[in-house]
Image 1 (cartoon, rainbow, N blue to C red):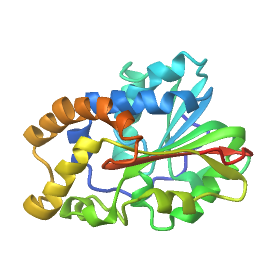
Image 2 (image 1 turned 90 degrees about the vertical axis):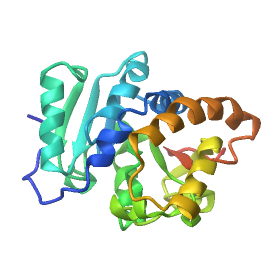
Image 3 (image 1 turned 180 degrees about the vertical axis):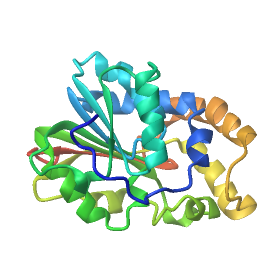
Length: 251
């Protein structure tokens, strides 16, 4: 049992999207390559869900001498699923499941990397959340945030899964704390941006179908992997921000 366990809280949330997007393997692999340079030995993943992101990122983290990957999850059912996956070998032995939120962790907790992968948009007071996370980073450690981009694309899906907002570059910059500086800021998935716009202004569906997700992941994301660098990472349906504690702003 993790030293970070707290009593179970009624913090459940819509989870069908987790099962659906767990199948987006091309996308998760693309994100893993973007995040890999910032993964240290001790990693905290806030809102770990079903463990799909951990499974995608763990191979990259392991090459850098991973010691510990803490899957922090407020939903009791999801936390139990994480525990089961670790126990049965579905997630690496370096993983441990913990109940709660960043506020549950002792102030003296210290990590090399803290991840919010499609999670920060679910948290109403994101500024306070970032401050709490930065305080739990070691000097030189990285805070990594991946979030859906552009408020204009806010759809019934966002509302259905409990999003308070979408982000853009200016919102990401405003999240910088007094002890951490932004070192990477880029949009990802320029082709998927067109699909998101279509859903927002034409389909307005509350949940994408498995077929829609397959087309996006297998075709659109593959194209975005080639086109995003050509556009200088200035277009995309997701936005990635990375902060380094105690670093100068070199983004």
